[in-house]
Length: 204
Image (cartoon, rainbow, N blue to C red; front, side, top):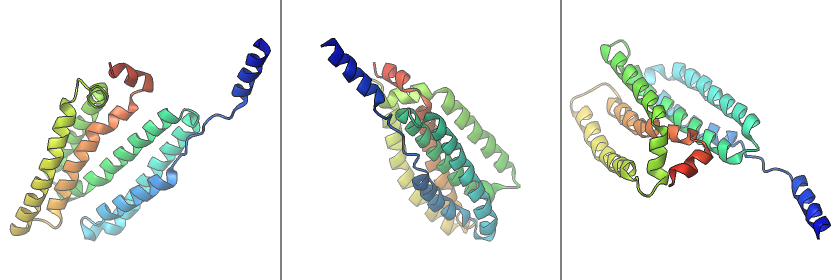
């Protein structure tokens, strides 16, 4: 009996480890669709921003590949990193239109420092954010985000209409809406950096 158990244990050790699918193609396609769309806002700088966004796309993919080489046998951890990179990439592409419109004004710097503050703060509170999603007793943040998303739809339609009536800069309303949407990802992305064992503790 002991020999049988030893043989079974040895065979289990010889089984190949599960390797994470790096999903670089899927990530590239997602980034490509988003970055092409945002590069056209405003249209007069489209060629410059296609080049800039393409560079950042390959930087994000390079980081993702580096993480895959280090965590490809830890599938849960790697997929968490992958979602984090994808969300932060979307944040970058989504916020650039409003910064392009505000460049050269004091509002550019106000928005820049405010955005950095939001991103840094959300990383400090990543455990609390994760708890709100995995712990059934802490659902306040989920409720707030749900209301926020519904409000975005109403605000977005209203904002685009107002911008059109007042002859605001081209695509100003869409740029602002993109920024509001990216705010959700700024808050949510850092929770994917929480280690799986820590997530289990947050469930209780």
